[in-house]
Length: 432
Ligand code: HEM
Image (cartoon, rainbow, N blue to C red; front, side, top):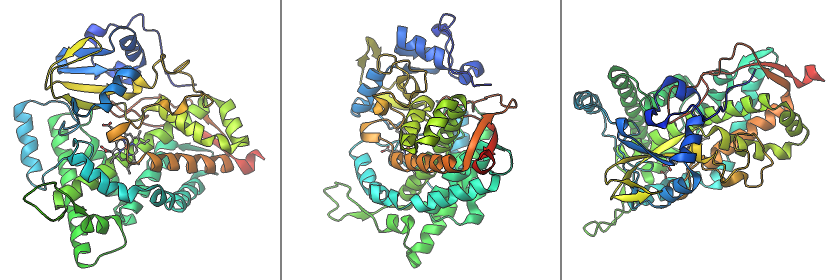
């Protein structure tokens, strides 16, 4: 049994396209294909936004941060005024949510990004490899002889959560809270949850803020060798002629940075790891090849990123009236750049729906975006994918999808990933 990936575009009607439609959410590929063919810049009037779906136009947008701003506030959809008031009220109970990286434009963005990049140098990431490997082997030990697993809960979620928790020095007894705060942070992104659910999620974010504000306070008194202390010691240049000295980050800025690391680092990597297993189970010849030749691992990770594109899309706001692909986008309009569709653009990738780790232009995908907002954690998630697959190749003889899989995806049109993945597994020792 394999997951649905694509079907014909003949019956697709773009005039009624609704990204929240449950059927579309499960398999959006025919819609995106039709958009690339007929309307690569599609206005969805009912939602007041423009979807951009081909590789060339998505690339054009992400290069031009002046015309297409990332200051979209939060990554959710516009909401009615009375609902907004409820959210404002709950948010006021903790620290302000301020824009730092993902939702900031240059030059502000550049200052924050420069500062946080220092903690994400290739060397700093490489130093995490032993940590990633030891978490990976411990997780594998816990199920390798069980005969079967639900991959999302038994590997896909815990690996990235524990890695980011280690990077942020979160103790093991707070891991469950840490994951909950991560879920709360993304609850409203590209989903149509109720206002009560959103309010509840913002309460979780408040809890996250209070926890880390207290941890930062502890380090003001007793500095440690960790990322939180580095944030406290960091000095940012405001480029303000009135201010001659660089200043320390304030608490809302530090919390915003920490929240982005938490959110961006967890959910996306979970989805990538899960999809990697689904793709390998669907393509057993590729599993056999990579097991025999582990030098194929980076290409498997890269092709998984292209095909799965965990961050399906991202918002931009047009800062002026602009024509794109022959369509006028008015100033202030919300634009959705659909990385997932760009990554299956037949103008760039031959047989774009096929899993082919040998394709020549394998790194031309936009799963991590490009340019100014290029994913800060790209090397970290690639490393997690590589280490996980190296260990699977050593320990797993074979694995297959069970009939219990329904291949349901989370109902979000921003973050795409399977709810669960049931696998029958045979360990290498048994297989030998
Ligand atoms: C497979 C895993 C991941 C995927 C698919 C992914 C995807 C993305 C994408 C598409 C963007 C750019 C959005 C835009 O252009 O507006 C982005 C930005 C970002 N990502 Fe990731 N990400 C992943 C893992 C991570 C990890 C592990 C971290 C950190 C621990 C991280 C931290 C960030 C941050 C901080 C930004 C904002 C960068 C900026 O605006 O300058 N990501 N990510």
